[in-house]
Length: 243
Ligand code: GLP
Image 1 (spheres, rainbow, N blue to C red):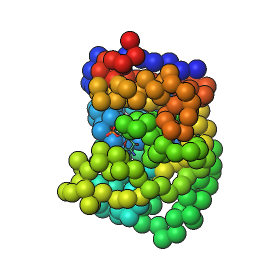
Image 2: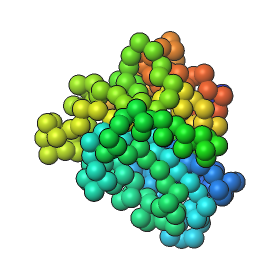
Image 3: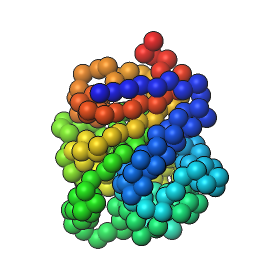
Image 4: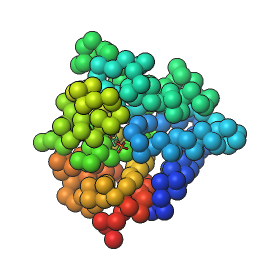
C-alpha cells in the first residue's frame, strides 16, 4: 500500500518526514534505519537533531545503513556520503557511531565490498524503515535507469545526467566520481517500510511517472508501486503534475 502526504513546502515536508522517523524510533528503539543523502532529506535531519536536543527522540540503540556511497572518495572528503551523514546527523545526536554503516568508498575490491555490505544488512536482520530521495531520472539510491532491476548492492557507472545534477556539490564536474556503490532494488524492496521524500517542481514529472506510470527499470522508483508499505511525502511543487 502506498500513502501520499502532501506537504505545503520544504519545511513542512521535512517535519512530516521527521515525524515518521521519530515514530519508528519510538516504536522500536533498536530499529535499523536505512538512510539517504542528497538535499531532499537535509531538512528532515535538521528537524530530528532539533527534537533530539529537546529530549524528544533517543538514537542510542538505533542502527543505520546508508543507501549509497561514491566510489573513490575517502571518509574525510566533504562530498562523501560518510561525511554528509556525520555532519547532518551522526555527530549531532546520540547514535553510536559503531552502529552506523555505509559502503566503503575506498574498498579495493568492489565485488567484495558489495558482498560485505549485503551480508552486513542481512546480519542486522534487514531494514525497518528505508528513507529514499528520488533523482530526476527516477533513480533511487544510485540505481540508475536500465534494462533490469538490480537485486543486491552493486557498483554502478553514474549517468551523465546524475553527474550533471550532483556537480553542484563539487568544485568542478571533473571532480564528480564516475562510480558509486548502491544498495540494489532488491535490497531496498526488502525494507519493512519505505519513506520517500520528494521536493520541488523539477521533480514533478518524474514523481508522476514513478507513482502512476508503468513499473519499469527505466524508471527505477516505479518499482515502489509493488511494495506493501510505502509513505510518500512530497511538497505541492513536486505534486503539481499529478493533480
Ligand atoms: C543522489 C543520491 C540519491 C538522491 C538523489 C536526489 O544522486 N544518490 O540518494 O536521492 O540523488 O538528490 P537530491 O535530493 O539532492 O535531489
